[in-house]
Length: 164
Image 1 (spheres, rainbow, N blue to C red):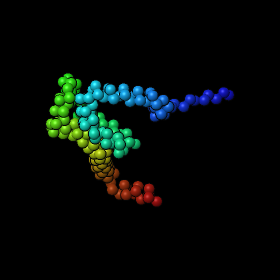
Image 2 (tube, rainbow, N blue to C red; image 1 turned 60 degrees about the horizontal axis):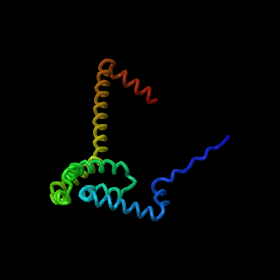
Image 3 (cartoon, rainbow, N blue to C red; image 1 turned 180 degrees about the vertical axis):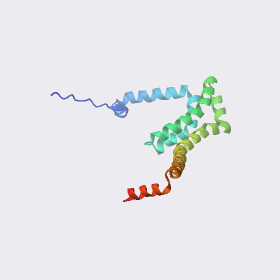
Image 4 (cartoon, helix red, strand yellow; image 1 turned 90 degrees about the vertical axis):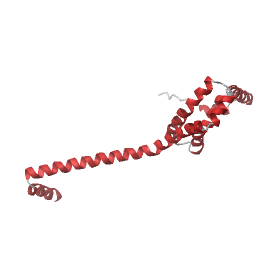
């Protein structure tokens, strides 16, 4: 049998390291140019997405946490990013960032994502406990009803037979 050898996918990290130095500098210059051209949007994104960047640096292996908090954070920043894009000026971006209420909304949306990430499992546990308690109460009511119909002596005899 012929064995087919799979080519290894170099991935993004390895492909970047394999670039020549001139292309790396060209890529860096291009990214700097794009950041300079879109400076008002970049400033709002850098300040607004600080909670997401912090999680990316401090806990890079926890993708669920990054996605949940990052999505909520991006939702809070997106409102002001659209405002910056509509009125594209550096003064507009700085005026958005100088208003504390805007910062509270941008960073508070990440806090809401953080709360949801840590409290949603507790809510599921609580709902499971409530469901189990209701089920136990329903089973107890059925047992009482069966005990009335059959008599407690019959049930006790069956329990003793099972226990032996």
